[in-house]
Length: 420
Image (cartoon, rainbow, N blue to C red; front, top):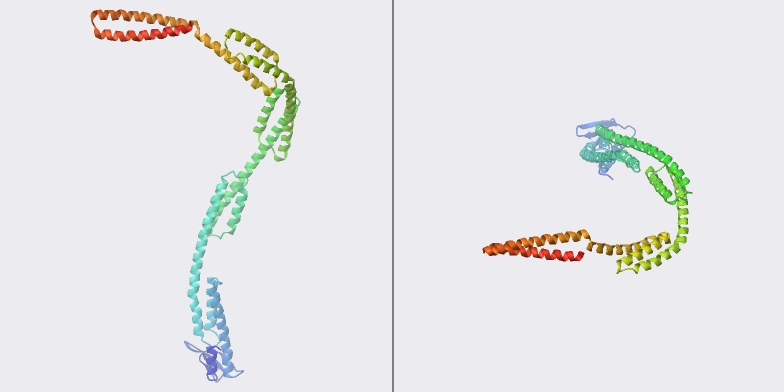
């Protein structure tokens, strides 16, 4: 049992601490400003009258308690809480009820600082969320503008859709800021879309042009597939392949078909050429055996002992080599390298002998000897004259000069001997 109810039960009939019933049945409530009439109750006793109006107070007290809980939990927005407090306080102040209305009003007044603190906290929270939303939207705008200047046609459109979905989930900012950022974001999307459409229109035009070129190249390749002019036709196929690569991709639905036609024609030609070469290789296998035997004779000429006899024998072998005819392609390089090695060895010996018997070099060597001998005779005459004059210093210089010229003369004579 509550203290208020105990007080009412312990008081005299017709009165209690917060109210009383007059003799005429009027019920009064006691407040800080004095008594105030809250109604009358003529159907029962004074105690029943007080009990009736006390229950009204308990109902108000229940409402206050519920409002206190809702405010404390933060479930009510500050504006809604303030409105509810004001409305309920008016009910308490003017209530037709008996109880401690002043205390009840005081409890409602005590909620005001709580609501003010919640309002401040919510304001700070909104400011933080607004700042975060602004920063996030600026990031979205910056990324959208980068995409607008890019050529990422494969992923850009999907990324812009993701950015738009993220934008819609973010809280709005103040109207001016939000509108300005949205205009930049929307402009970037529009720019990207316009560039993307232009790119694919150009690409479609290029692919259509490539289709025309590749259809022509496929026809040309098919026309050449039955040619037996192996060398020239292989060169034409190389040119066609170069043009094919330069043409770029055709529309996807026809590109593979055109390539199959082009490649099929190539395969037909080169397959026929390989078969013909295989037949020739088989036919030329005997020629390779003949040249193998000639090589054995040619390689036996080395090292060269008698140059003239070796040259004559090698000429005969070369004639037999040419007469032997073609060899299989996989043998050609090896056989040619071996015969060329013998030929180069013989030529090297020939060049060496020629360099030793070169008439021009021999003449130049004889001329040099003559000049050196004349110079020595002249220096010797000067030396004899200096000795006769007793000029020791000049004698010493001329003796050194004479020794140098004599050394050069010895070298020249040795070189001339090599050409003799």
